[in-house]
Length: 326
Image (cartoon, rainbow, N blue to C red; front, side, top):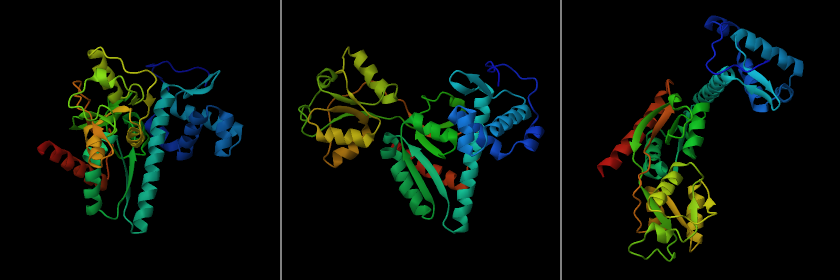
């Protein structure tokens, strides 16, 4: 662990697959994850209820088995090398798959079906996921579906760690897009939403310059819809008010808009349609010329999905196809 491995540097002592299979156990992978998460042998030892010398010895044995330096000592603690990041990423996937296997076996032993985990961005939830999930649940009432809403970046992390089976999101924010398989579903449309009592709500035509005079609720920086709005404003030479409210939560945005006579927000068309039908929001007559990035169905590359996950994917595809025929 004396020095970090340089990016792209080949290691001539890299172990054979036979050696790795013969010597590495799941407990070794748990140890590597603990060291990366805690950043020190001492804290990892405490987490794993091991002695510090025991962790150091095990880490040395793992590195010797693999023929690669996995951690480098820095003033900030132990930091994973490129090889370390590679090994630990796969370690997390293996342990996640093991947990999925155990949960599925436990469910089958209770004759209670199985469990799958799916994630979605807000726009895809209203447009595709909600109806797809209801159809799937009717077809497979014994299957437990864990539904998660989040940003594309958060959902991709869930896919990479193995905690999600499917995500409806964008891969443009991925740092390593080659880890994912993307299947296009929809080109997302956006609308500008306000409270029904907002001064601009009854106007038959609104410009972005007019809306910019009011406080906005914005997605955090670098999120696709935030980038879209900033691109639209720049093209029209319009500057939004400083110090906006920032949130990635669709429910928080809708709640704040409903309670404020001044706030303005950019949201997906399907989301605005839903809240407008309930009378809690109004869309502004403000066309947005910039186009949003499409979203799709994303899974981990090279992973053989169980049949039940394929069944859920079929429901998603069917619902997306219905959108295009309306």
